[in-house]
Image 1: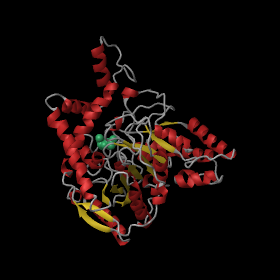
Image 2: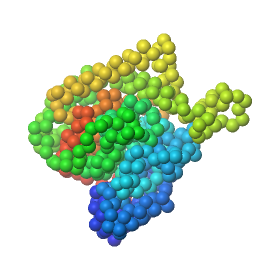
Image 3: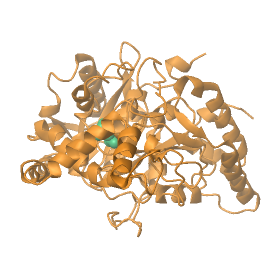
Image 4: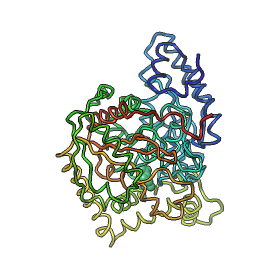
Length: 491
Ligand code: GLN
C-alpha cells in the first residue's frame, strides 16, 4: 500500500480506512514520518504526539475490526492549534506564561473529533495568545511558509496553515478572532473557515476576545471543510454562547450550482489598497462564478474604514480582562525571587508576556479605564453595531459577499515586525466578519508571479454556511487548477 497517505484528503483517508484499504495506524505513521521529514523546515509543530496518535489510530482500527462504526473522520490526522485545551501534552498558547501548563480537560471540539475517529498528531505553533498575523509572536519558533521558506505563513494560526499546506496532517484546527484562520489559509494556499459566531463551542478555547473568537478547520479542500464542520458545529451546554440551531449535513451543500445566486462585491474593498496582482486573481475567480450563472452586484459596507480601529479597541478590552487570570498564581510561569505579591505579579507578567501581548493588555486597560470607557469602548461597541448593520443591509441585495482575504500575499519574515500598524493592516478584509459575527471562508484562487498563494474570501449571512460552501465548492470544481505540492517542499 502506498506510503503517501499524508498527501490525501480527509475524505479519501476516512473512506479508505472505513473500507479497510488502509489501517488508521498506517495513515498515522505516514503522517508522522512526513512531519519528521519536513517539519525541520516548516517549524509548524511545537509538540508531536507520536505514541498517543498511534494509540488513537489503533483504537480506530480495533473498532473497525470489531465491526463497530469508527466514525465519519476515521483515521484522519488533525493537528491542533496550541490555543485549544488538550489533556495530551501541554496547552501554552505559545506563551512563556503558560509554559508547562497541562489542561485537565479536552476542549469540546477535541472531544467531538475524537468521537468521530480523528487522530491527533500534535500541537501547532501560533502567535502568542493568537495576537498577530504572522506567527512571529510565538515565544517558541518562527513557522515558515511552505511556498517560500523566507516568508511567514500568516497568523495567528500559522502553524495550522503551514501543517495542512505542507501535508503534515490532513486537517488542522485554528481559531479566528480577526482573521487568524482565513489570513493564514490564504497565505499558505489552503481552505479555512471562520464559522458564524456561536456555531462552534468555545469550551476549552483559551479566550482572547470572547465576543469575536471562533474555532474552525484548515483543510485541503472544501469537501473536507464540510466534513469537519459536520462534527464540530452545534450547541454545547458548556458554552452558553453556542447557538441552539440545527446543524445540517454540510456535504449536501456541495453541489456546483450558483446560477442566479447574487455575489456582492463591496466597493470599499476594491480600492487602491488592493495590489493589482491580487485584484486580477480575485477578478478572475469572480469571472469563473459569473460564467456559471452567478449575478454580480455592487454593494456598499460604508463603515469599513472604521473596522480596524473598532476591532483593536474591542479585542484589546476583552483581552485585558481575559488575560488577567494568568497571574503567576494559578497557572504556568511565576517570576522567581520576589519580595512581595505586587512584585510577583509585576515581574511575572513583564517577564513572561511578549511585546505584542503586553501592548494589547495596556491598550485594553486604557480603553476600559474610567474617563475613557465612553470615549473608546462604548463608542467602539456602537460602531460595531453599525458594521453589522452594513452587512445585514448588503445581504438584502446579495446572497454572499466575495472579496480578497488579504491585501497582499505572504510577506517576508521580519518585514513587518517593527511596525505593529503595518501588521494590523494584514487583516483589513477579515476583521469586519468577526465584528459582524457572520461566517467567512478563505480558499486559494491561484499563485502570484512570485509563486505565493492568493486567497479568495466568501462571506455569508449568519448561519448560512451552506450557501457559502456551495459557492466555494463550485469555484473549486471549476477554477481549473490544483494547488498541488508547495514549491519549497517539492523534490
Ligand atoms: N491578526 C489579528 C490580531 O492580531 C487577528 C488575530 C486572530 O484572529 N486571532 O488580533
